[in-house]
Length: 90
Image (cartoon, rainbow, N blue to C red; front, side, top):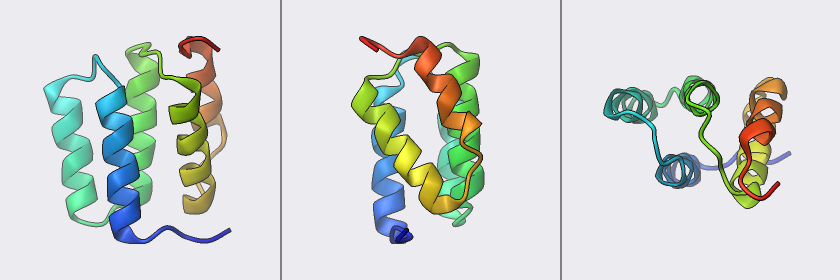
């Protein structure tokens, strides 16, 4: 699997944050700080964890994109599996 470029990872993480209506400003700042220092995997894990913790429903296409990004980053699959529990229109 191809590893996305830093620019692509930034865009995809920002798209997921934009879709995750209900994230706190602190959560957004934390994920953004991790993106800025190139901690892509930690940013991904933090974002998925906070989306799950806040029970934020994402559209299936957003979850599928996160699944692909997670696979490319080597993240644990259960991070995105949990997101399906609150998926919008799943």
